[in-house]
Image (cartoon, rainbow over all chains, first blue to last red; front, side):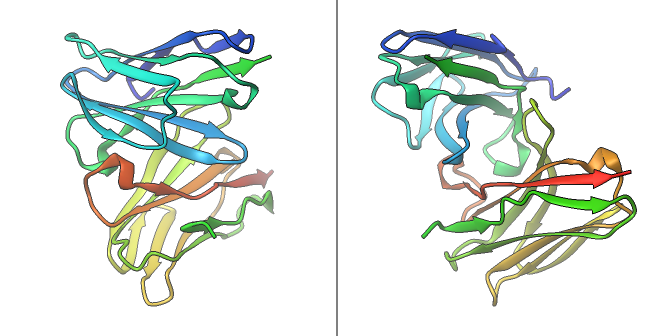
Length: 113
Length: 113
C-alpha cells in the first residue's frame, strides 16, 4: 500500500457527462500528480500541483481540469466525456519535486460508454 | 517515432530464469532512468533508479544504462511467480519536472511456476 488513496475505484458513465476523481496524497506529501494510462498511449502525465498551486502541465485536454485543496487532497474533473477518455487515471504524490520520489495510488478505472 | 521504445511483450519465462527487459531511447539528454513495476489493477511502484551510465544492483534486480547506445536494461535473477507484472521504464533529462518524465509502453511479464 503506497499510502495514496483514490476514489472511486471504478466509474462507468456516458459520453458528454462530467465526472470528478479524487485523490488523497500520502501524509506529509505536498505534491500531487495526475496521470492517464491507456492501452495505446501508455502512461501520460497530465498535471502537477504543489502545495495548492499548479506546478506543471502535460498533455491535459482543455476539457479536463484539476485543483488541490488546502488539505492537500486533489480532484481531477473530466467533462464532455468522449469514448477515448476511457482509461486508468492515476494520482501520485511526493514529498519533494524529485521524480523518483513519486508514490502512485491504485488508480480509478473510467469507462465511457 | 516515440522518444522511448519498449517491447510490450508479452514475455513468458519459467520460474528461476533470468529475465532481461529493455528500453531504447532517442533523446541523448536523458540522464535519469527508472524502472517501475505495475501489478494488475495497481499503480506503478518504483523498482530501480539510476543516474547516468552504469549498473545498479538491488537484490535480484540489476539496472544497466548504456548512454552511448541509448539503451537501458533491467535484469531479474532467479525469477519468481510474484515477479509477474508489467514493467515500465521511465527517463528524464532533469531530476525535477514531472512533465519531463517519459514512460515506455511497458512489458508484460509472466513467470510460470
